Image 1: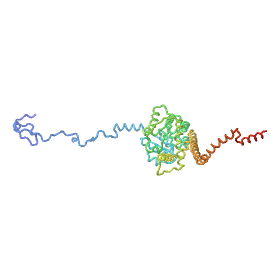
Image 2: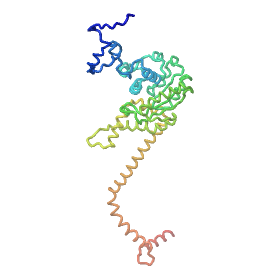
Image 3: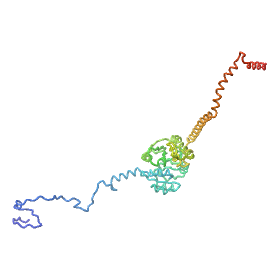
Length: 383
């Protein structure tokens, strides 16, 4: 260490004066700084480091994103639709909209329609089964359902697959599934009481009938059934749990009658007019709704619902009773028009003739000889 020297040296212009003299202190006070110098920020010290613009940005590795993705995957179902006609496509659109994976198979080639809906289409049912869907929906016509079930390769599916039917009758497909499906399969019979026309805008408050025919007493299988029913509940349907037999009794009196009247009016050739009433508009809408369905559907409602014949006979009896009432009233009107004048003219003559006849027969005092002669002649003839 060098000894301290009292000799003052001229400070360098680049060296700050760390030890000012008393003279400089006494004669020149430091002026206040014009600007306040702040310490440099982390960005200024490290200009090329990563800058965080928002701490809530949803990155792919974000915890919330991973939780949300896991939730959607855990609630999504892999659903296969057998029969991809109008109604099958109608259902598939709602399934895909809720994030479910949808597969489809049909006799006809609906590849383009399936692609437009985000559905994987298969022409071979074996290829469909190799995808191992969790839910298989029977969405064929009523008439072809047994043929489809009998030829379907169940052995390629998982043993606990949930089978769902959406046919318009319920006892027939219930018995069909119980007959041909392996006992390990779950069975859920359903009937959405609407279609592409009546449910084109919304499913809100439209009835959805279901019957848990055979659901395994297992947490996973029970939860899967509830997930499927939840699809329709989320769309706003009015969920109605009902046995298949009770459904067919009610459907024969509502759905079958509705289709019958719609087809009768269709053959009646109803046409719109400039003076349509609200009631007439209702009839036109009925024809429009029912004419969009195939005759096979209507025939299936009649053929495979044992209550349909009774309802058809009731309709026939009601129509005959109505005609008899109309013709009966018409007969009375015509009778009055045709015979009313004659009866009115003859009525006074009968009233005067009747007392005269009674007076003649009852005469006993000899004022009228005609009765006596008749009496005498009658006596003589008797003797």
